[in-house]
Figure (cartoon, rainbow, N blue to C red):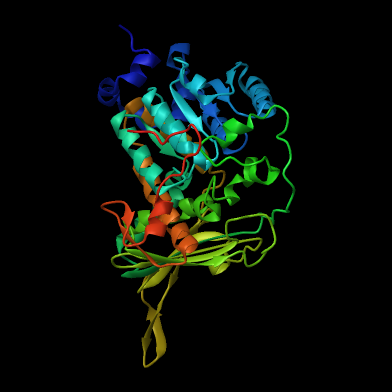
Length: 448
């Protein structure tokens, strides 16, 4: 019997055994060179098509073997626009759905992209895994610590490939920087600074509640979140500034950057977290989450300092975002543009006589490098080989949990102490209430 796409994607044993030298090539290169028969297509569906969900799909469709079989969105206007976009890009007409559960019943789909607001990620990812689909899920993994644990368990129980949208994990210059950190040349690393200063995020003006736009299933958009009147500030992109649906800049950009800290330091859980901040720059705008926040994480043998700010961009080292690994011999700074070393001086009689480590020119990210494309290619390769992707559910969970803990410390105004073995905070009922997922109405937290 010939090995069809369906057999190859569902038989993990055969896939692992059959992965040869060709699977080491980037998927896009391999398919363009060899051509793709219809039986070898990887068919994906998208749940949440307005923002990063569709950006992820565009990236996947750059691979000749990937086909879009279905789209789902609660906004009929967005759904129709994206259907036309897919037709124009691929000459294929995807099926369209208003309810993600109907999309998951489509037997032709091999994988789904989840691009919905954070409060929907857990239900949709767990149910997709249960339906036998592999999953590319936007970051953060979940909107709570409790959901993060369930989503890791679902990926394991249903033996699914799950890739999180923390695409720096696939970027070559990020990996080079982490290799240098692991080389020990920086000396003992005592502090790691991580930050996001986002000048392109303007204040959100206050607007009154209003009826939901025509074609929007607002009850479905709310889903497990508390019932509230429709307000355009809470809809589409700005959902991330409201605790019902997300965790502000901490979980939006924080998971990207904190993930690099954890990778570089080979760390998982902090012992304690303290945070301070608030709406210090724009106290009267409509956002709930802080526009300014600093959090201090104490790990076993190093400190992590997280800083965030909106409407300004001159962060540490005059970079809008990045990670600085501060060692005894020097500091390595990495961001999306590249990485460089700042060596410490060696002193004799209080005078500099040499550098404590080698000096080297800055390393720029490769011209034309598309980290997202490399990340989606890794996902598709792992669908075939059944190897774990570079940012699987466990990796995504570590970043999400650390980000949520920073928010919990801020929201409770207390230094919180984390028990990673039991996924709970010690002696703090108010903080532990925020560890839990809060589901409203008929929606229930999934069981795995």
